[in-house]
Image 1 (cartoon, rainbow, N blue to C red):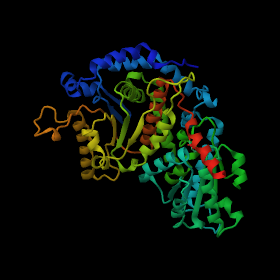
Image 2 (cartoon, rainbow, N blue to C red):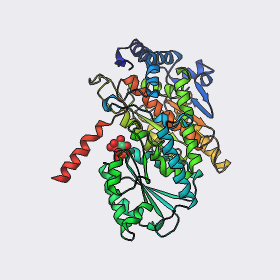
Image 3 (tube, helix red, strand yellow):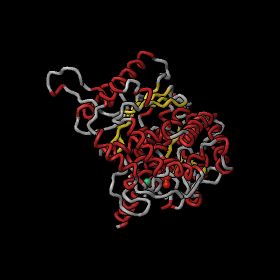
Image 4 (cartoon, protein in one colour):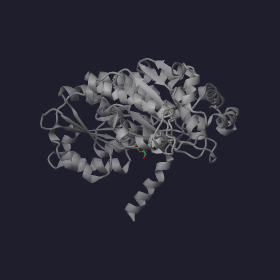
Length: 497
Ligand code: F6P
């Protein structure tokens, strides 16, 4: 296994600390004047992606030192350990291999078998050859799951609405019974498919919701009809079977797939049904292409690595408290929620990989919402507030319905905001301080040709790898989630008292 290094003891970290003293006050506006080719220099073009990270509070020396840090913490070895299935999730003694789910040409036999089960099942549901208990085709799918068993598929299905077929999808996650009833109230039992998704099949919220939906179904149908309307996705085949779901209707996954990285597995079944198998395969392919980029590209040209290093720079040296993600497309309205679990469940840790409490900052707080909505909500604070909030701006060049007028306005806003955050009102006369904008507020611009299943797959994988890199640098275990257990236990205790 790769070494467990306290990052603050590395030479690079110490150099970065000194370097920070020097560049802390340097303004990006001046960097752009002194380095004419800054945008070209700090951009990475990969497939249909362009990352422009020039609008960051960094110089070429900053970048060199950050790259040195990546080398010193043995990032390369860590990446290889992950991809080759080493037990890097040490607290759970597990490998972390969601990347193996999307390496379509090299799938392990059991992964291939489940994927082909998904393919056949989704084809039957879409074509209508799968019949409900009264002989009618399925029109609505309800996914019952929470956390990683909800956020990934819900986000991806929403993001790929343009590619969706006639099936309507619904997601029940909260144990809030009112939400369950609101979802069910317009559904017809005869044409509804329920997918119960729980990696553990012990999650109280999901099982309670599943029982409620089961009772709703049985108000009109018989126990023997369940097999036509309920399927499950889980690693816990025993519990699935005691819930009354047959083996043929069970889709499995493996303990080396973390919940928040599971949308690539059968957890993505609702998405696969909604967009069709070939689109689902494109989603996997896109992620796989990003995996290859992450694994092979030199760190200086590696999108996830650069994003992670910059985030560490702000988190640990500028002491930035949060970072915002602003996708300029309504299709990605659930992307930030998804990222919140991926990033904050992974890196919200304060014990290092040696078992000691850390004395430096770890996991970033992720928040945000879609542009331009965000501009009319919280951008005031990002522009003129006292906090430093590095932002990732994400935009797609082409509109899917080809509405050029809207797209021009959308993208004009995207560019205008990053320019305003960079330049502020520096160099222009303002009437008073109220009207002054300091600028010098960092942004990354991720500009993608078009929203497709493929590009969505790559985009998600960027953030998965980014958080991994950060976990390696911070010397924490990114793949467990022990922090959610105590609250669960106490809720049970209250219920039983
Ligand atoms: O409570 C956190 C968590 O364990 C997540 O990590 C996971 O994605 C979610 O609960 C749901 O777990 P399961 O799929 O086992 O029901």
